[in-house]
Amino acid sequence: MNKKEMSLRDYIYKGVSFESEESQFLLMMRMYYLITAAYIIAFYIFGAISGILMKVPILLCWLPLHIGCFFTTYRCDRRVVFHIFSGGILTWLIYSVYLMGEDYGAHYFIYPLMVISFFATYRNFKGKVIYMSFLLALNIGVYYFGKTHIPVIEITETQGDIINIMYTVTLFLCMFVICFIFSNTNQSALEKLNEYNARLKREAETDALTGLMNRRCMYKALEENMLVQKSVFSVAIGDIDFFKKINDTKGHNFGDEVLKVISTYFNEFMEDKGIVCRWGGEEFLFLFPSHKLDEAYEYVLEMKEHIEKLPVTYNGETISVTMTFGVEEYKAETMVTELINKADDKLYSGKTSGRNRVIK
Image (tube, rainbow, N blue to C red; front, side, top):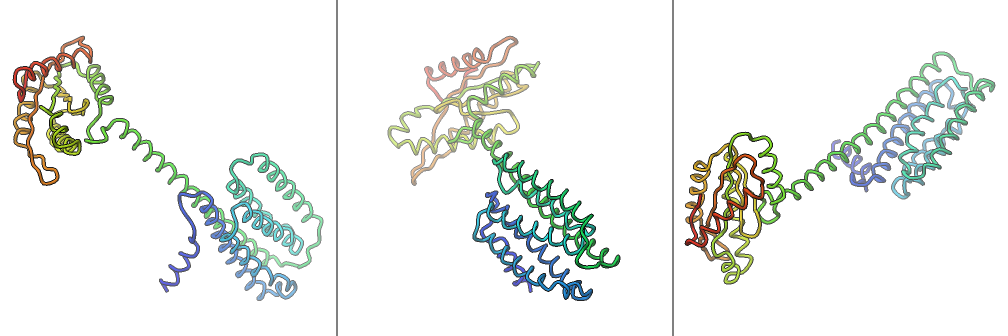
């Protein structure tokens, strides 16, 4: 039984991509056709019991035609499917009023038809207005026709109540399908948009190679820190010693591996201490909120000593590298560029005095 149910579900969802609005529309139409097919079968049973079906045997053609329309959702685009569907619904509506009068709810199927028409096409505003005007005129016309026309089939009060209940349940289910599919579609689209925007934000703030915060984002963090942080904080800038030589002798891929290995360590080390970014090339900038110069110096010294012992392996070859750092403490009224320049001057001093050291 499960296998049959799954195969039916697979058939209903055949060709449906939740990335495609057209295929979602076709899925909605298939569900709509199945619900109304269930209504037709229920009507046949009721009609056979009540004798209505025997009075109008032409209604037996209704289900085969309906099934045929269902299969157009696999072969035609959504506009063609909608026009076929619209024609079928309106034909049934008019014929139903002609047979049984206006009091049994058939004209209410105009409303889901109106909703569906807005999903059949997205840009044809003029066409939608014309179609809405047509449906309005038809609804008014059907109402007055039903008031003056003598029904072909005499319906008892009990039979009328049953027909109204069937119409109401079918209409409710059809509207539920429309709302469910397109609310899910909108929710999915919103989630994808939010995910896309989040990815763009991450890409705008992240260095592609190392995964660290990039220079632009660090500038923003420093400026925000200066505005919010009333107490002192410190920054450090570090540079990989002889990095150009690594690129020249071992290749840029090896150099990239060095950057990635070191960045992974920095990211883990700074997790509860502050922020690190790839400042550019082989340079890294560190922000230590609420840390004075001596405290930041101790952290940077720990990083320097760890880097010396950190192996970097690529293509079976392992090397170790060293780094030189300059550390600077923020003073009131200091600009971002001035703060970084001071740390950079200390870095340069460390480079010229032998490298592999921390200058504060």
